[in-house]
Amino acid sequence: MTVRLFDRVGKRPGPDNHRRINPPRLLLQSFLVLIGLGAALLKLPFATTSPITWMEAAFTATSAVTVTGLVVVDTGSQFTLFGQLVILTLIQLGGLGLMTFAVLTALALGFKLRLQHQLAAQEAFNEISLHTARKAGASIAGFALTAELIGIVILGSFFVPELGWSEGIYHAIFYTISAFNNAGFALSPDSLSGFVTHPGITLSVTALFIAGGLGYIVMMELFEHRSWRKLSVYVKIILGATLLLNVIATVAVLVLEFGNPETLGALDSFTDKLLAAWFQGTTPRTAGFNTLDIGALTAGTSVLMLLLMFIGGAPNSTSSGIKISTFVILLAATRSFLRGNLKVSFFWRSLSQETVLKALATATLGMAIIFLAVFFLSATVDDEFLNIAFEAVSAFGTVGLSRGTTGELGTVGQWIIMAVMLIGRLGPLTLGYTLTVRRKSHVQYATTEFPVG
Image (tube, rainbow, N blue to C red; front, side):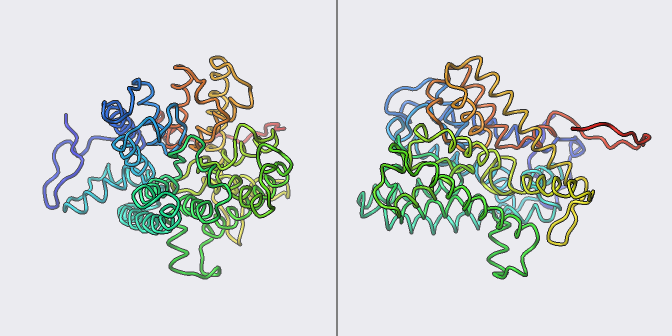
């Protein structure tokens, strides 16, 4: 039985209208189809300067769709202009979400979304109502395209004097799309290390991936209200936590790497060190670019990045990880419990038990996925434990930073990382929904005490 994507407005639904479709599973299938199509395009002879294997094409396509940035072949030298444009397209589709484009296409052609695909869009956008989900497509696209257009203009003003008109504009387009979508794909093997002391390029790129990592809900509310008092509790939490994490990470990188001759120690002025510390402190929460050699970072900095990559960015954004909101809720829940209060609250608002449990489930599943990935990678990849753990967390957070392990993965290791990148992009809870059907129990059992800790 064929399932149609859209029904035309006014057309009577067919008999298959009642077929049950799991929205997260539909989203997963859409990503898999896009990855397969992308791999096939990247395998074409004119997509590369020299032949690549199907495994390399699939890994690159998966990394692009999941906006990760981990690569087994160099993007700038291995792929032709056509291949690079395919990668950019996959990044854009993966970053904004397939359902965004499905909704926009439907509305533009005068179609009406069928119920199961409204639910799919709702799941993709993590929205509260179907009405909001249907409007989210146009809002996300408008916000993204506007931000990217501004980014291209700004980066173009810096790249053109450095590289000339044609190459400069192309670099501006490539890095804008890659940065805003938190993809981390670069045209140079050392990412943006050549611009480590260039404030215009580094600050513009950080502004783009921070905006993408905040998401359209936060940015639109900021644009509409422009007043801290009028912002919702959610936006206040996201902005406050983002600022705090970025400041702490920047200071920590500056202190830990200040005397490292292979990173900040190689830079002359304090201003250059601070700029590099800011960039490297903000990028781990899913951006994936680097201006310092990641493999040369101290162990302390690498461990800090593990935490930042695990946390990720905001919900409804181009970033992944367990999300800032999940991290803040868990901290708030711990604080409330230690104070003897069973209600979790902040900004004079209480959180529902379902929200707290969802945050707990997200973090637990995320840690379980990372543990399994590290376990299997340790058994199949010959590398230091820190490098393997860094690779696994980077894949889960769809960050794209690596300490050099990506090129040493082998076939089995690449399959593991591909699976983790996909899970990290879709979200551990979405995976859980895909594999299980939630049923509310109407049976209530007697309460019992159980020792914990």
